[in-house]
Image (cartoon, rainbow, N blue to C red):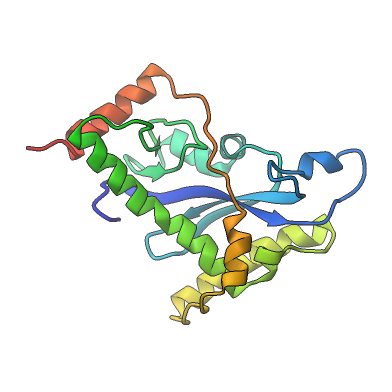
Length: 212
């Protein structure tokens, strides 16, 4: 994936707008943008497929919190993917299995790492864009009960994969939907990883991005 070694997927979150579910817990569904949503988390493959989707967390949930409670993390912790890594944005903590961009690259190797990281991770952002154009309800929002919305989200992700595998053309660009996708901002920082995580990233940069 764009010259970034060992990557098996890119991870990110995306908000699906919903109406207020009501009740005592309604406010936990209100996200940082001020509207009610489900914060879905997906892992994207190089060919624009959903490798994994989690669609059950309220809009106020942090991306890292969602990841911490997924089978994806459990499988990485078990070593199911050998030395494979995920790429995520600043909404995640850098670990030995999930690499994030450097906040302030200083060396040529660090800049090359960041450029390759950004150029590769864009795949998951493109996936969300195509998915929401293919199923506009994912862009405009679902005015249905939560028990109905959650399986619809997963079903549309599965149908997207079917369309990609069958070679269906991508839906045309839609500026109106683009505005709704642009509202989707999960890229907020989390506390930096521990020293071991920073060491893992530095070693990765040294091994794969430093000049010979």
